[in-house]
Image (cartoon, helix red, strand yellow):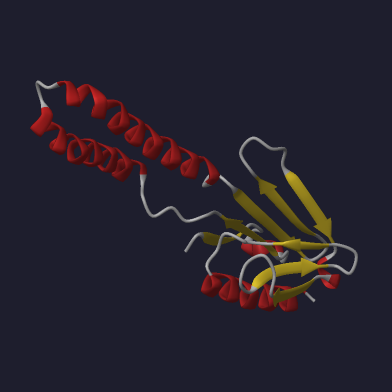
Length: 164
């Protein structure tokens, strides 16, 4: 699951405090990235073996190198977007959400959890998860799958009800 709940208050304090961290899932780990680029380079070089020693090699080689560079760049950009983090802190008197995107300033939303309503609606993504306090509506976990958003919605509703 690309999210994790943590209990942040000491057990004996009587305070209720929850912390939720969300992050986008990446199916290709960094180690797999190295193997993928290596295998791609080898497989793209195999057809070039037929033209070794000819002038056709110099005509094809730039295209092969540009293709490998494009794959490398696209995967690096994907990893950078995977550094997005959302953090939700929930206590009896405050709900705070931080969103960290690489290259941008952090965005923070604070409100009283008593007034927060959680909803799934149609929007930019299927079953868009939103939180609203009546004045402002924000999205949460747009990078999660539909099933994960549904599960998170149910969990948030349960935890907010437990605090009221």
